[in-house]
Amino acid sequence: MLLEGKNAVVYGAGGGIGGAFARAFAEEGARVFLAGRTREKLDRVADGIRAAGGTADVAVVDALDEKSVDAHADAVVEAAGSLDISVNVISHGDVQGTPLVEMSLADYEQPVVNGVRTTFLTMRAAGRHMRRQGNGVVLLFGGDGDPVRNHAVGGLQVGFSALEAMRRQLAAELGRYGVRTVTLRTGGVPETIPAGFPGAEELTAELAEPTMLGRTATLADVGAVAAFVASDRARTMTAATVNVSCGALVD
Image (cartoon, rainbow, N blue to C red; front, top):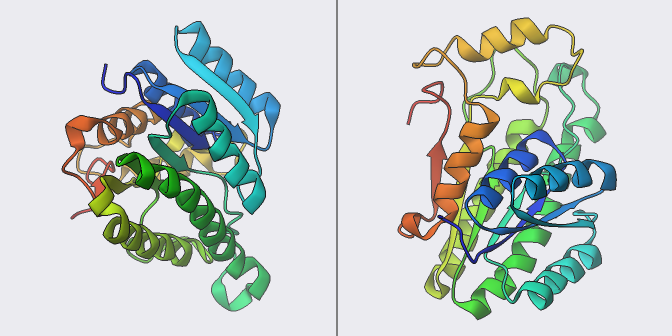
């Protein structure tokens, strides 16, 4: 298995993307530490992993709180001996659908402030342990991209661009210690659209239309690529982005 013997922390593991990461890591042999604010959601993901023969631990962690993040990372290393993979996919609280000229400052800056804060805290916590270990992988999800023409996304893209700058800097500083950083980019994953979301069918079709493969990535697709990138088979990949968009995004 690709990740046998590895210990992976997934912040926001109770959500669609986080759950996909966690399940894929566990399927490839990793011990997965699920972190998030809602115990019930985390337990559902953990139960599924255990039922499939995997190993999962659950902890309620506020990934926007410095003490909570640091204490959890330390606890993971104390319990498992290492922290090998870290990925943060908590919600940044982006507000969409409101044109920029009609948006409040608070709504615009919220995903930027939250995204930078939580990513810095979890990157730093993992990086400290990985530097000491001499290895590790920090994964991000999202990536920057072209402006969105037909939908108002508020500060979403600004936040993603800030995270990419952070990832590049972390790669530059920790590469000498064997620590890798990679971002996974998609053109949207329809399975993450909330049930009952107005216009969900139209949005799904809109996401598929620009792809070169005529379909969008699934949660399983995203998880499978993440597991490979986190594995030693991808040991030459760092300071990089991985395109999981089915051709919606052109490199």
